[in-house]
Image (cartoon, rainbow, N blue to C red; front, side, top):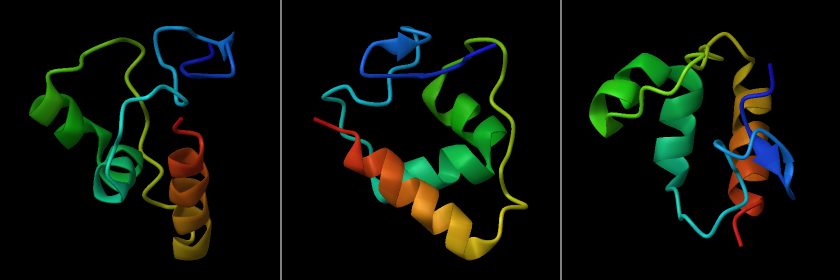
Length: 72
């Protein structure tokens, strides 16, 4: 199942390109420690996001930059 959306495509409950400003640190934390971020934010939408902590560091940082670039 699609968990997020960009430009109106995908799950509208998880837009990545909204005007919501996420810090780079929060984006990185969502990608690497989603269970901690669920607890911190109270966002318990299912299916739960999986951890991408095993991504190579360069790939993880590229993903963070990409997600941050989607914000309007």
